[in-house]
Image (cartoon, rainbow, N blue to C red):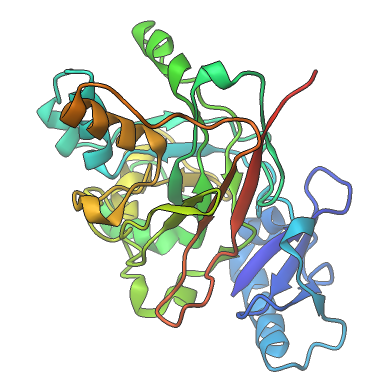
Length: 328
């Protein structure tokens, strides 16, 4: 099933069920007011939502209305936890090679992960606001999962059973703020502003054969304005699958229902598939030509990210954001 959150003027919005073809939606308030409520009581509430989803797809939901992603917040407008991994080690390797930094062997053996801000996610069609272009505004197309309650020291073999929903994310980055923050040895903060999510969170079964319990085997398409930047295959070159990322995150703590774990920037070794961020393009330009030629984002530009399945149907809905200057 496909679940979203309608903007009703409150912080957490109102849960909706959306048809498979993204044409219709239905309020789910009679079952659960918000998506977090469903995640807190998945075994009882999810089957009821599935029944509503079936009725919606069959044209039998009497109070259905036209689905409009512009009226949506992020599926979880705020979450208890947002932990972003770096499962596509090729991305890390490219960026490190471009600045002639050593690539530790352990990066291929154990995931990198940082704790992102989860109190204020951006809706799928809302502008991305930044104070300065000089900060190096960049997008990062990622796949993410939402889990139910995960026990401490959950094993990789058990972890896939805790994956309830998948999402599509734009983990905005401010590249020129990264070096100073990392030099302090305490990780990202200012260089990682609010993350945006596509309008729909979907159950794994919606992906059919494209989901193997660990990875999504579909291309992630990113557009800068109207130009396709890349369509790397999310199932390839993902060194650490989602169960391994869950195992890593739960090594020393429980993960509570509604925690979100990101894949990191989707990245393939095959250059012909393009890229999911500008930083990789610039890294290759530095390695090939000595200098980067591609600029980071300017105010007024748009970033669009989406995933189409084998039938060319939009899985998560489209992330479509304009970069604008924040005026305090």
